[in-house]
Length: 118
Picture 1 (spheres, rainbow, N blue to C red):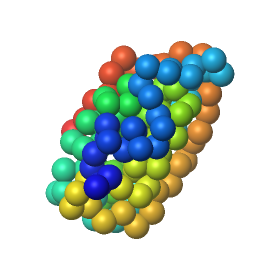
Picture 2: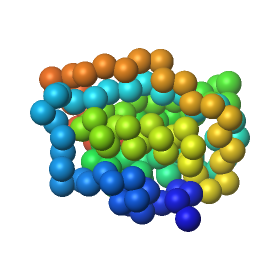
Picture 3: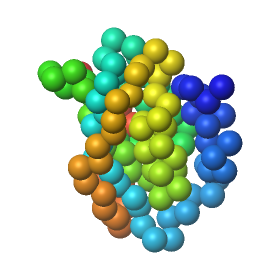
């Protein structure tokens, strides 16, 4: 199944980590995921998928029960992460909706790794 499997998801979506696709710059998104996304290892799985896709950024829980973060990397990999955040998530999560509050192209990443923020 695709649920929670970042490498398997990336392979099935045609995204390859070795094809960095950075010719047009680095894609960057700010996201917020609504639904049952806290207490279900959503941040841990998000970091694992981001690492498998070669993305940098961060993810954290919010006081209102959502998960928010930023992801940066090659456009195809960011698109794969966006799809995962909005439709797959962690195995026990129930995603109601994904909101992308900002989408931009950067000359280079502003983070060096993907972190879980407390």
